[in-house]
Length: 384
Image (cartoon, rainbow, N blue to C red):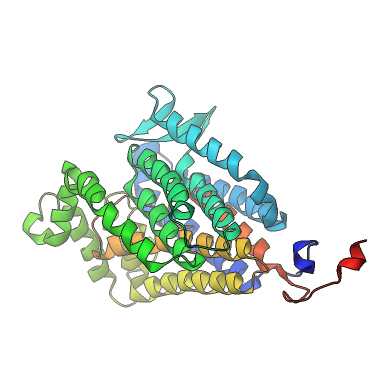
């Protein structure tokens, strides 16, 4: 029999120091830029220019503590909790949509309140979905049956629809993209993946082009200058931030686009603020940091001692980086505008803490390596 199927053959070592350092650098950049992007608005609205900074720093402390905890929890423990996670996920997504329970802000019902605190369940449910997919696809050795892909994708589809109803298009798309990548890495036939893509086209037409404000965003994306005083105004302001920033930027705190020009400068369009104040050099620094997260995450996945760890590390790495590049692409005008925060950098407690948790799980996976060769066998007499 195979020894690895009977006992835990993993060797525990140190966490990936490079990934830990990069996460710390990105989050530190987020604290600085959150203050710079929000100080004027905070002073005008709350009479305290440090209003958002103090909260972001507290969330950073809570997130860093969460990272340290999840770094120590063996990732295999999550296998036993997938059903509970899915149940909790669906309950929370439904509660968010119930008037009087879900907290609505600017027309979106994405938050639940617990006493003085509110949180965005979809930010944490993304992690639950990735754990579920990693568990399901790591236990299927023969990936040639349609039901092996259909049931998990139905569950992902239900989560996608519930998140879209909030509405939160950016987060829903992020989950969908990562789910498809996990399918591919799991070894499923490209035919199945392409079939899912074709079948999803009518759905995307209905939820994107048949919804007025999303259709307007696509129109603004295609030709913002034609609607410079209307639906194209905000993306043009983002372009202006890049132009003003030039190569080295105007200096931290000296940007002007964040003052009543850019929408949500401390959240959705914080990358444009970085472009104006730190220039192309600053934006490249941020992009390189996220590329490093992807590289180290994939390296952790390749070195993982089992399929569950490999798929989980792949999914969590992509979850962070795909969201980052959606946000960056929107700020650069490469994608239509959608409200999605820049991981670790945008202001917001739920986003920061959930990404810190994802980072902690990645760091835990990085600690384990194979101790015994996968083809090592032991005689059955030993167990008698």
